[in-house]
Length: 470
Image (spheres, rainbow, N blue to C red):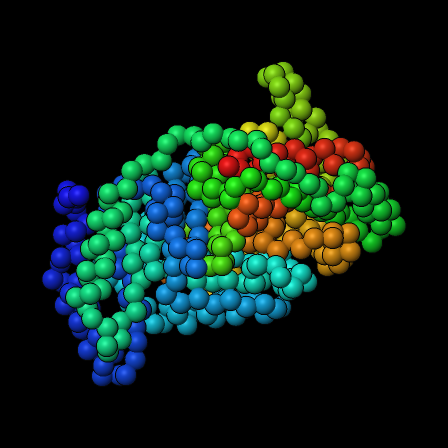
């Protein structure tokens, strides 16, 4: 098959790139060192989800992120360097790892396009240690990908990260890039939406009675004033007659939830953690930070009148507003402790396909000396996914929940070399392992919570994901 010559191939043929890599290699030879080169170039438009589908190998780590409403998608495939650790120091060690890698990265190419240059992809688990011995993800993973394809505003950027040392064959490096670009440019787009077979066997890990009993018990704790809120999660185990199709499931999710962050991470051993999260933890762009206080929810209505009535009830409910306020207070306090001064914007509704939330965006300017991971460490977990007081709530969660949260409700995202970043909270999510999936969802319990209603809310959130799985 012949591929029409596109603008990107001329870039790889570019003698400047060859000369540049040669010069880097000479320096490596002289210093007996190795150097990571990050090459950014614009290529013809290709769908990052299709790229993920076609390039992913089971034994490689990858990461996928898309927000259809913002016209952004990014696929990161395979690793040039990675860190996988557990323990209380994980955010500090991840920050140190990124900073030391950046000292050894040299850029070439189109550096001022969105998503150009090296990006580090990070996923952390809810707790700093998993108690379930065979949980498939460590409590922190950070990696620099070999291939990164991103789309923003209908423009597509390919970033190739490669290690140059004294012995590497520069011609072969360029040949590999050329072949990869030709392959990428030959990919077809994805069909609009996939069929939804419903032949799953479902099994709740905790049954309805158990969950409601936990809510009753938590309400007792709240009454005796050790706690003002706790988030209790539930899981649903689903078995399919054949292996789940990760890419069709992600494609469905992005069609059904265009205003959510669609994400997928893999561990390089065949398991994936995917979801459609409505909740951003932080995004930083040119030192401008935005974070979401998202707590308090109600179902969408079947008619416009019912929808409006539900929204109205949500906006005026003392219980929901109290739950929401706990999150705002926590975020503003934690940011202030870092010397980041938050501006709280007006509260509004965040309406998704089957649920609506109270939502307050909070913005701030980030001082140059505050690394994004310091902010992530300071904010995670927020009362929206843990409770308040946070440490008491986390200890109680361990007591009530019989399953490992793992990556559920934890920070996932990317950081670039300039300190720009985007992290979301991994809610409305599922762990996919061959023909098995475990779906996660939670509900915030505060004074005035009704166990039946909380159970119904969790079921509603689980449906968001179940509907999309193929």
